[in-house]
Image 1: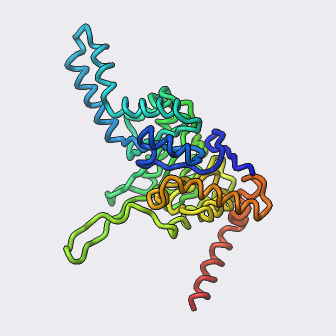
Image 2 (image 1 turned 135 degrees about the vertical axis):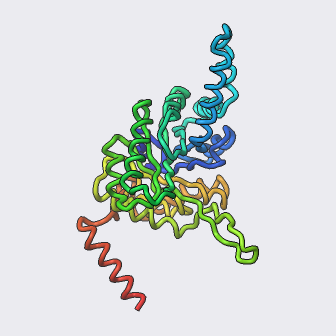
Image 3 (image 1 turned 30 degrees about the horizontal axis):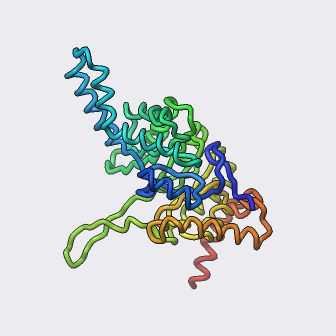
Length: 326
C-alpha cells in the first residue's frame, strides 16, 4: 500500500502532516510526531511580533555597542538568546532527530524587515516555510483589493529572500478565494493551506462578558476546505493543496484526498485523541484503500473534485438543499 505523496516538491511517506501546534513546538514533540507516523511537521509558528521585537532589541544593541571592539562577539552572544535563535535551534535539532520534512511557520499580518529572517530559517535547515497570513481588517476605509495585494506582497517579500519552497496559509474571508489562490500560485507559492482558523469570541450571558470561543475545531468545519480544495483542484491550480481545520478521522482524510488535496494537516484531533491517533488515521486510510482496491494515493486523488461547470453544479446543490428542507 503506497501512501507516498509529494508536497511543496518534498517527498512524504504519507499525506498526514502535524500542523503548527504545541505538538511541534519542542524537539520531544516533533520526535513523537515522527514516531506516530506523520509524513511531515509544521513547526509551531514564530509570530511576526516576536521577530520585530528581536529586531528592535538588536538595533538597540547596535546603537549601544557599535563602537565597542568586541561588538561582533556581543551580537552573536545576544542572538543566541532571542526568539529567532531559539527557533533556529529547534529547526537544527529537529533535522538531526527525525527523517521527515521540517516546515518552519511564520504567522504574520504585514510585510516589512522581518521577512528577511525567513532566510535564517532556511540556513538553519528548514525544508520549507509556511506563511500563515492572518490579516483581520478593522478599518472600513481599507478596500478588499488592498488586503489581497498585501497578502501577495508579503509572500513576494519572503519568497525573494529564500530558495526553499514557500506555502501560504490563508483564511476563507476573501470575496473571490479562487482569484486569491491563483494569484499566489502564479506568484510562485509552492502550496496553499486551506484554511486559517480565526479564533472567535462569544458572550457569557450570565457574567455578561465577552469570553474566548473554542480553540478546538470540530469535524463539521472541514466542509469549507473540502469545497475549495475540490474547486481549485478541478481548475488545475499549479501548486500543492493542503487541507486543515476539522480533519478528525481517516474518513475526513480520504474525503479531502478525493477532493484533490495533496496533504492534510492534523491539530485539534490530536489534542482530543492524543498523538498516537495518527497511527489510527493512517491505518484507516490504508483500510479504505484496500477495500476499494487502491494501491496508491494517486489512484483516487481528485476523483471527486468539482465538475467542469462549477457554477451550474453549485446552483443545483443550493436548489436541491432547499427542496430537501421543504
